[in-house]
Length: 371
Image 1: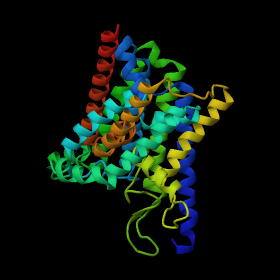
Image 2 (image 1 turned 90 degrees about the horizontal axis):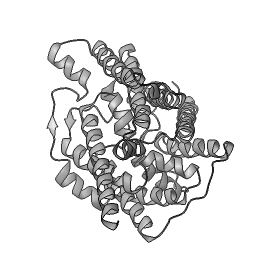
Image 3 (image 1 turned 30 degrees about the horizontal axis):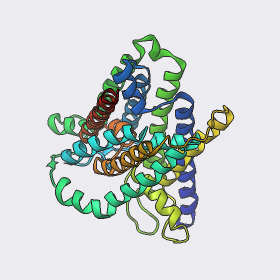
């Protein structure tokens, strides 16, 4: 590739990522796709319908990503999730904080963006506070404690922490075939579980699960295939274009919210350029807003009172700190990360679920005391 062609390719990567994120936002707004809501439905009512949406999205993402690995299009080790260093304590602690926080804030990072598109001023405040807390955990005062005390507790594995790499290391099997076999095995098992019940075969569940899972795979392809240069025309280095991590990326909504705030605040600084994380954050809001306006479901929403405001602020802080510490949110670890079959993603996801259940039980206990 010639240097003159580079800006055009970067623009193509960014517009493609934006469009896919807008589809995510549109589907989530239309189907009420929400991880926190899915957990709350089970805890409070025993209803698994929305959880089936989410599990179908995970299964679809697993199948799609590992099919691309089998074809040689992408490699899990090029993502931030599948490196050999397993920061298990960060995954656990960060996941618990994020899960508890998303209940207090009425939804995770992606749901916050969807709710902004639907007219929620509550979600707009959560967005701002989450972004500040996230940035402080990436590079600020919280980052110092995170790096010094939490991230130091880790296991260094002989291969990448994704299950195909571990299987290849143990058996000598082909990496591509291991990924294809494991991805199909786990993914099809989840799809079968979802479709086993009538509610899992409803139009909304199929649209949310298959659509959002396909979006995750699509962004992996945009970043890892379309935006990958084995030799940058200027630096001659292997590079993934328009990424904050300098690695292959898919959707995640904690650190990118911080990068979006940074870009908006320092827009005139020419060193602040658009990245996949920033455009996907904006894309989800745009897609959600479009559907909300077309279906006439757009409604301005404010806080009910002081306690409601405090809960959302505390929840946003916990999500910002927890999401960065865990290296992802319900989408970052729960869909993108887990599609790579990384051990850390399974640990973080389990911790997020546990944190959410704890918060829901705590809220129920408070209501019972007040009654």
